[in-house]
Length: 510
Image (cartoon, rainbow, N blue to C red; front, side):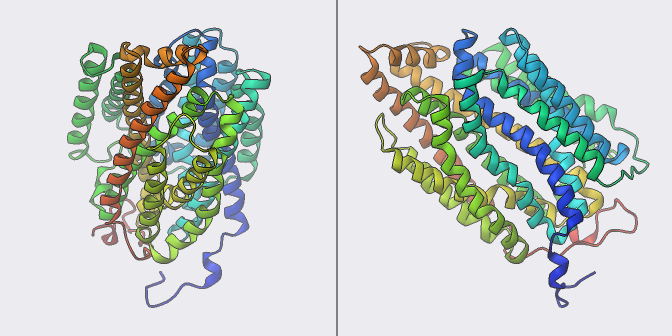
């Protein structure tokens, strides 16, 4: 092993062709999943009108997908070990492909939500399995660079997703936002079959069935309860607090049991690693704040400014361009100077950009808004993947699959919570402006904006509601600074693989 006193040869840090081939396959699968999420966000307004339903119901197109992710992610770490990452990755793409084809053929809102759940079962396995494949292929000392490569779909999503989605919704049909995944999925399966390294499934520990019965339904119930909050305008409704409490009880029961049994579904001993724990806390706050604001940005352009879905997508492009500039640089810097020195300036840039949106009005300059989005993208490129890198850098190859699973559970749960929090804030503020029940806030705003007699006043009132909502997201982003202060300020040394292959090595304990 290379020690701190023996610098690693420069060429050992480069990503060779074997790693790049694997990266190409993983990125293609990730592009498909992430593109789909951003494409759907732009189409929400069009789907609301298509199916003549409320924004709260339409939100289930995104929420149902998240529920499926939450259900299947806990099993992924065990399945990677047991069946091999290549087989699991190809199975995930197949589920996603079939779900996409069916979602495109949906005949009502209920069938669309069901098929999105099927998509989510594939999408839930794609990211953790892909992350595991890449991290194992590259080795710990190149995790930062590899995460920058995996960040490519994170860039293409914000840039390409809204533009592609807007064009498809405006010029072709909303159905094609799902059909577009079919050819991509077929290519991804063929490349995975040809390029991914042959599976070496090891005799896995006995599957923790009891843990799965607790954790998967627990996560799904919690996210379901939280996601119902916008519709009911609070936590008083039975289908908010009851699934929420059931979910929390099941998750707590899982944690208590997981600390006592050998080989639980999610390895909680990972959290003894100080760096991993700090990265997970930072990730949680970041996903709550960031995904919430991402949900309402396209809605502002479509609802308040009257832009088409395509125009809204083009207006969001500077964010992706900003991330494209900083993400590859951030990946190299994390490997060289440590995650803390990269993530903190990134979060400060995001805070500065969200501060601009807290002042948004009905006629705010597009130049100012696009400049703020560009700065937000710069910050996103310096924060999102480097936080993940910090979490994985000090782990052994044996623990990477379980760590990827834990990380993706945190991301999806926090994302669902963030989306629900921001949705309820926006819905209640709009409802207050238009004097209706919380669940009717967006519909009332849409109706008032479409009426020429009330349009101007409605635009001012709606913009004010968005500005106030962004003030809340600003507070949430600012909270990310606290755990980020404790992220490592030096490059991580690769841990030694323990001879017992599975016992946490000494380097993991800080």
